Image (cartoon, rainbow, N blue to C red; front, top):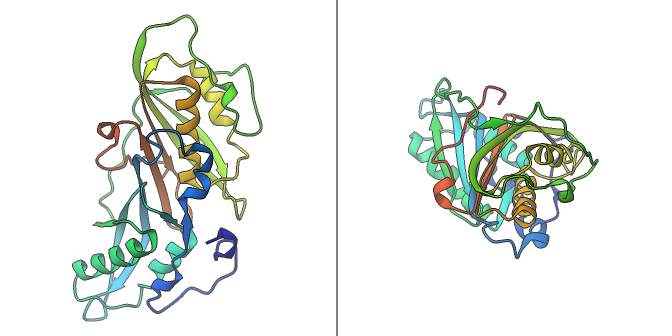
Length: 272
């Protein structure tokens, strides 16, 4: 379905009754057309945190939790964020006889739309741990080149080092725009790789070139993964974005050439 037909960017009444049909699928394959020959582009997970999650127990008394969704990158569809927000709001006045009943209902609804098995964990409202970013921060560097749109030609290797290295870099300057509303999305990007050493300043310039780019979170991460893989040719690569919260949701996509490099649970940063 075309995202232009979704509720994103449109004035919408918040539902007060259970409405699973409000969920809106977006085909992943459309954005992957340019990267369909890049190996491992579907190796990964999208983690979503749902901060506006409430329902009623059997006594019609409100319950509240933080939800963590685990969505495999192999799903046929991703779910448009506003429709997901409205779906969870439609649960606010719905009674469930147990947390397990709520979890199973949500998993069934989302899995049907995404055409893949989606998992929901409920977390206490004070239960999220804040992590410190790991690896070397590259925000302080000064790139020699700049671009106003994603430009993989900015990427380069450190010409004076031929040895194979393994390192993790991170940058807090990732910014892109929602392709429908134009609203900015902010995030911290992590890149772990094994291969010939990357020129850190060139990587920073490349990340900054997404600053005016229109793309969903998952699509931006896959584009970065594909272009770093194609241009710099690492032996192994992991790209992870910890996006800040918007509309009661944050999205954390991860793509990796090796499953062992995918975290078991998503990183949580203070800015999220």
